[in-house]
Length: 339
Ligand SMILES: Nc1ncnc2c1ncn2[C@@H]1O[C@H](COP(=O)(O)OP(=O)(O)OP(=O)(O)O)[C@@H](O)[C@H]1O
Ligand SMILES: [Mg+2]
Image 1: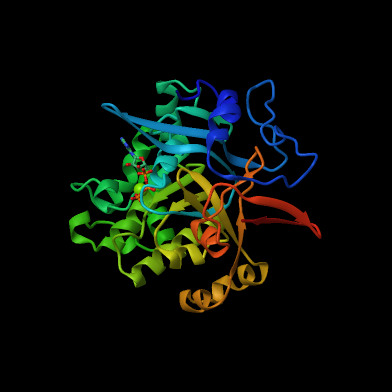
Image 2 (image 1 turned 90 degrees about the vertical axis):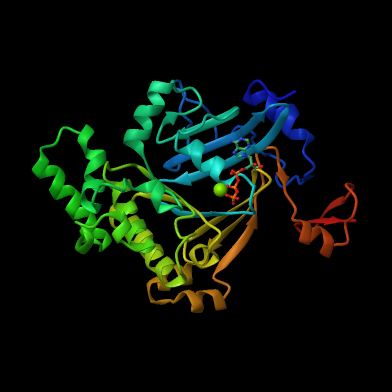
């Protein structure tokens, strides 16, 4: 029933999707982005740290199959800070777990920092998780060992590295300082507020110098002031160490502050919002409120490799489209979809 490989998926499975086809370019080259080199890594002009190509994830429980990701396509450049938003159940955590090597895709291709995660062995994935990715979860209890102090928590991932105790301590302390939580170095998680614990968790996630930092609802359990502080830390470490950061969030104030916001709907990227250049330059001087009051981002629909675009329910309703047949015409250089 489901595709065995990516080609099959692109040709048959995804084509069954109820999305409107839009032919934007006559000379569209289907394999432009994912041309594979001899080594198997995708050839791309941009320095993409992440490439998802036709990513499918199916969860099977008893007799029920859930399609959590439905041919998702996404590229993220090295050093980007992006937010992923979407309704509950849209596949955000599934995508993050897959990028983090915690789960394997059912079909499609997934490359992170040149690693082919789909083809990787279990042993390879363990090594990948240890070296390449850092995680921050919503629940700080998931991030920290309760019987370790903040400092010991940050030191813990460094035990596997060949470091003296002094070096370990110095590195962990340096990270706590960078995050501005070094005054809590000797506190245990239970003695810290939720926001403080999350800041320690960010230091823990950075300890082994990962290439990519993944955060699933990192501000989901804190108040708005603390959330602002955590958002600023993400931006600071993104700027200072240039690490790629992907944050899944429901928090629109966080999404407003990042330059690229990716919206997932039904296991696929539906739209992207890109911050307008003039706001990006002023970002440090803008409050969350002033950003929310202006149209800081431009919204784009995503055209996938098979030239399809997903239309939102709101857009369909506003255009009075209530069936699965639409007219598509090109007029004055524009594509018009109507009833
Ligand atoms: N381990 C699992 N077994 C079975 N189904 C799963 C599993 N994990 C996720 N799903 C299903 O996959 C779909 C996507 O789930 P996912 O957790 O990625 O959503 P989400 O966008 O992170 O939602 P939320 O905002 O509520 O966290 C949902 O329908 C969910 O029920
Ligand atoms: Mg989730």
